Amino acid sequence: MNSIKDICPLCGGHKKQGTTTVTVDMGNTLVVVRNVPATICSLCANAWLSDEVAGDIEIIVEEAKKNHRQMEVTQYRKAA
Image (cartoon, rainbow, N blue to C red; front, side, top):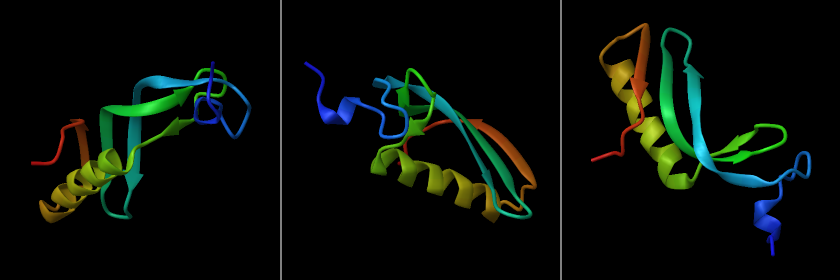
């Protein structure tokens, strides 16, 4: 039986575990992170990140900004 957490609040589709690509545009820095673990709606393809994964993405973006990169494309990695 599906729980309410398995139903997409936007379209009513079923959510399942998968991966997505996250793009963050911070003005002078554009960061693209691939293969990010997420919960994905099978109908509308909207993606939800866990708090832990979102924190990891923030660290990746901050590293790119600190290195004065205008653009960075990287794979997802857990924060150390």
